[in-house]
Length: 147
Image 1 (tube, helix red, strand yellow):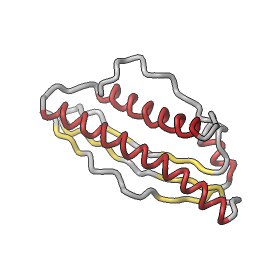
Image 2 (cartoon, rainbow, N blue to C red):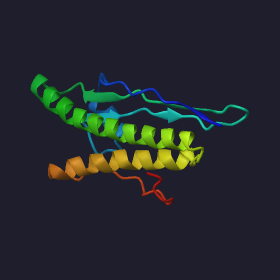
Image 3 (cartoon, rainbow, N blue to C red):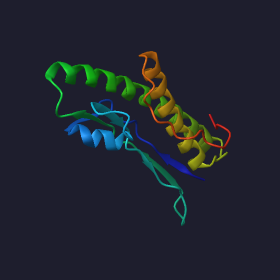
Image 4 (spheres, helix red, strand yellow):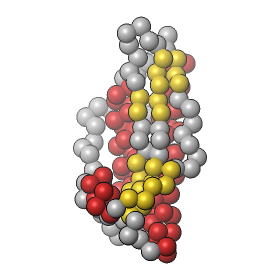
């Protein structure tokens, strides 16, 4: 029997100001003004450990070169990405809670891959709604979506 250790993600991300070139590196050259990263991690239970641990440390990176007005605009945009992440994290948590309760343990890596795909897809859709298609997508997971 597994147990799940998955606290709710922070309701506000950490804000960090960094050079625009660092944002370009993090975003695979698709952005230079702002970037959101959920900094998520999980462990796969094993070696006698039956506790699944999921953690997030969300950060919004803002380019140091931005004016105060630009910074406000970019931060607002990145908060939209953060809010999409929160919704995806809730879905992941609900899925994992159900799997633990019903003892139908799904492959965590599959659920994690789909969670990351959903977060990136939401980001791409947000950018497309603004007339920009700058998000570099990872390939769709080959497995069937677990939730």
